[in-house]
Amino acid sequence: MTHKESSWMNDELRMFRDAARSFFNAEFVPHRERWAKQGMIDREAWIKAGEMGLLFPSLPEQYGGVGGDFAFEAVVTEEQCRAGFSDFGSTVHSIAAGYILAFGSEEQKHYYLPKVVSGEMVVAVAMTEPCAGSDLQGIRTTAVREGDEYVINGSKTFITNGHHSDIIVVVAKTDKTLGAKGISLIIVEKAKVTGLDVGKPLDKLGKKCADTTELFFDNVRVPVANLLGDEPGQGFYQLMKELPRERMFIGVAGVAVMEKAIELTVDYVKERKAFGKPLLALQNTRFKLAEAKTEATIARVFVDNCIDRVIDGTLDVETACMAKWWVSQKQCEIVDECLQLHGGYGYMMEYPIAQMYADSRVAKIYGGANE
Image (cartoon, rainbow, N blue to C red; front, side, top):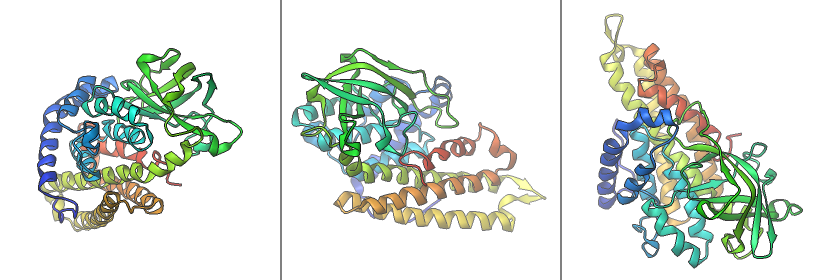
């Protein structure tokens, strides 16, 4: 499938895309089945991705990064989706590290971020709880100050990078009486705490290679200096400030998955015969693919415009929400249509379209449910 090149693309990004595509095809694709069975990608793969500059590529050079902008993040996300690895947790890694970059002290940034970009430290963000998903104000995890420490108690679920993570940005209530104004973001470094229990990998419908677990905090003590921001109670504002960027990752991934699904399906219907002719010769097939490509093109133009606005700092929350909602809806619809054109084979997990179908469904749930 071909489409007009994105407005944000340039020679440096083309080279970066080629390197990312080669890396995922060589270092990830051969291990797909094994990683899916074990419920996570090997930790070694994170180090290799870091060596290639594919982890948090928008990190400024002063903190050890490659100094790219959001377009570099978009390229990595697109290429991992093209390779069939929308479940690689590097996106969440970038999102979580983004909180440290945006709201951390210089000491925090210089200590953590070089390790984040190299893959030495994997990052998770612990928001969702068993009784609080899209309703972040409903979280029950607490961080009570005792002297120079916060004591964290509570549980989190559906945490991407939960097992491999070395540092976790925890969303907790530092004051239960203030509602949203009592929420704070606190860094927990696993190697330096006791009382943190990581559950086994969760058995999910799709995204089988994603390291997704529960986390349990039992009197976990961290220094007050691990707070993100100048004072407690800024967490909800910090989350909302970064939300457009997070939702754009979902939009970028959705477009890449749509385009790949159509590409795979066009190849399939050219070869597959029914009623004595290739499926592509049937009018219904051409209609369905024309509709799918039209909507994927609309999504591409919309998301490219949003990426331009992330880069220049003008993307607002409302537009980011529209992109997340519309693209995730269309992603599920288009992948479903493409699976249908594969017939019974589309229901077999050995065909990539089946994996894409299972992986796509959660896009309407995470990052804030579409409702």
